[in-house]
Image 1 (cartoon, rainbow, N blue to C red):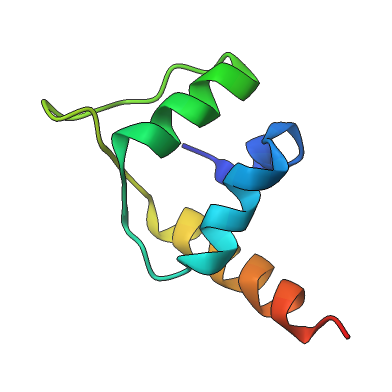
Image 2: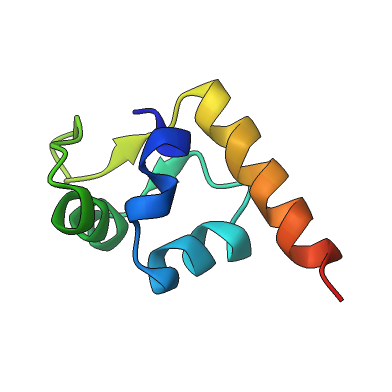
Length: 72
């Protein structure tokens, strides 16, 4: 997916969802829809409308959550 490339285009609420759920490997339909709406990028989805995050996406999200949580 390349969430790192899409990160700055996401709505603050969507970025907050990622920061609050850094261990998530499967994105729910609502998050997929928010990403597609904000970025115009079509994500690969399973039959339930969910998307699986690549390992590098998971690493980026954990790093983003760590940075966010380290803020004073």
